[in-house]
Length: 40
Image 1 (cartoon, rainbow, N blue to C red):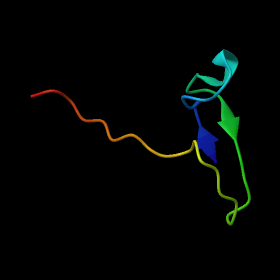
Image 2 (cartoon, one colour):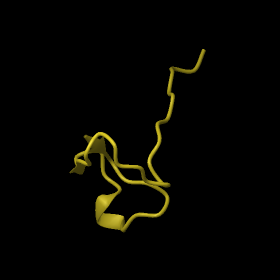
Image 3 (cartoon, rainbow, N blue to C red):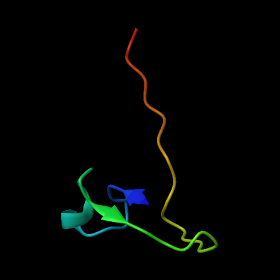
Image 4 (cartoon, one colour):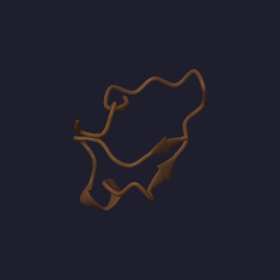
């Protein structure tokens, strides 16, 4: 399951509530992950 949008998506997809799914062996160039942590 892909959650949220990417830099190459339509504005309506750039919400954390947006969900999309692909088959496990499907590859796309604009899907990744972002690491976030609280500031010290």
